[in-house]
Image 1 (spheres, rainbow, N blue to C red):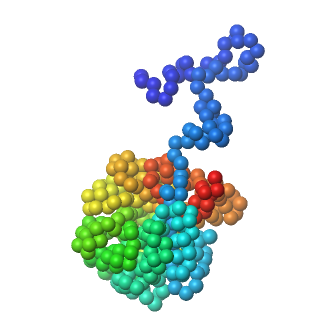
Image 2: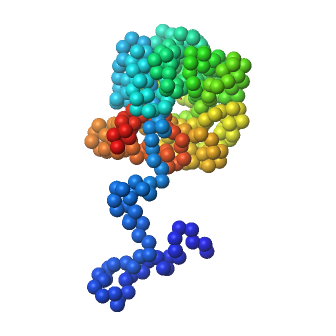
Image 3: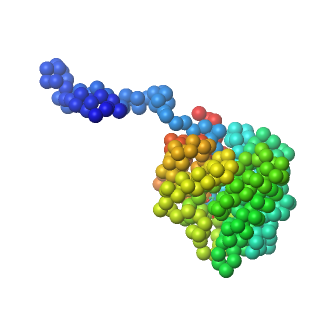
Length: 352
Ligand code: PBG
């Protein structure tokens, strides 16, 4: 048998020969001692296989009307006014975070059956994008494409008789994408999981002469309990009727994620994403290995909230859990991570 990771086992572990004078009887005669490389900080740094940098971070931010205010289920995360989101973008740029993602809290009075506020070129997201692009042009801006922050029923698409319509929804998402791209958004990120939306958005962008606008597709997005705090932040928890299992993926599936990736790549996605993060690292690795695309993970609101809640109770060390969880994405093959920890992690990395 070929030995892949070292010498044949029998030569690796032996007790020290009895004639070796002064050898404590319990000393093993080992050819290989993996602990040697872990002995000191410098050596650990030297042999470390994957390393997180600020370039790996995408920071999701929430924009709202009125006054900036905390999101109760996401300690340390606020909904920000347009002015404050520009300040956050400046902070991100200073920390060399390459990109921020913008999600709106839409006033309930503006939500309707069809999510029509999504198509308003002056909606909060578009206002925020324009302000950020004007004040902080060096930072990348990603916008989510889906209707859930805008619909009265909290679903990502158009609903008829309790069913989420696919093709009709795609037609609206295409318009939403164009509105956001025209406001200056760099990366369009469809998070709705309708079939065919990546291709439809790509061809509409191209027709509108928006050739350079990138698409990061939420490729393998699972119907997950870990989105709860996000739905609080965008105000869709209260309104959501039922669940999203007829369009988001079933958490028992893995091959299906590869088929989704294949489709999104064929339809023109520049980057693909797996979501949630830690519970789906196996999916991330499979997709990265199979396609070699720029592949991202979304450490979602519930993952963030769990770490924060445990840390606030003194049950875990929050900073260490943050760094460990984010490094796991790199190790699993991610090119980057959307994470609410982005500024805190970047500050730690800068301070090293
Ligand atoms: C909207 C959307 C969701 C998230 C990102 N875009 C929620 C959902 O699908 O219900 C979740 C992000 C998070 O939990 O941090 N389609």
